[in-house]
Image 1 (cartoon, helix red, strand yellow):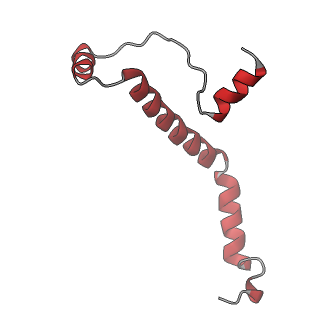
Image 2: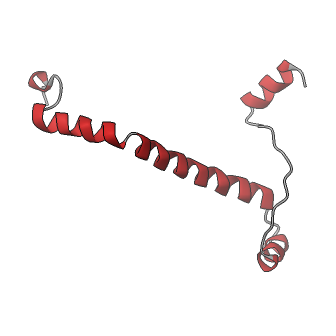
Amino acid sequence: MSSTQADRRVRTGLLAKRAINLSLSSDVLEAAKRLEINISQVCDQHLREVVRREQELKWRQDHADFVAAYNATIDTEGLPLDEWRSF
C-alpha cells in the first residue's frame, strides 16, 4: 500500500483490520445472524469502548497520587490566581 493510500485510509477513518479467531456462544451467534447484525462491527465497537474505559481507569490509577497531592495543595493554598478571579 502506498503512503497516499494509507493517508487516505486514515483521513476517511478506514483503519486497518485484521482477521482473528473468536469464540462466541452458539445461540447468540445464530440469533445475531438471523437479525443480520454485523458481528465484526459490534465486537469492534464494544471492544473499543472496553479499551477506552480500561485506559481511563489505568490513567486514574497511575496518576492518583498526583491528583491527590494537587487537590491537597488546592485545599490548603486555594486556586492559583484566585484573588484576581472576577466571577
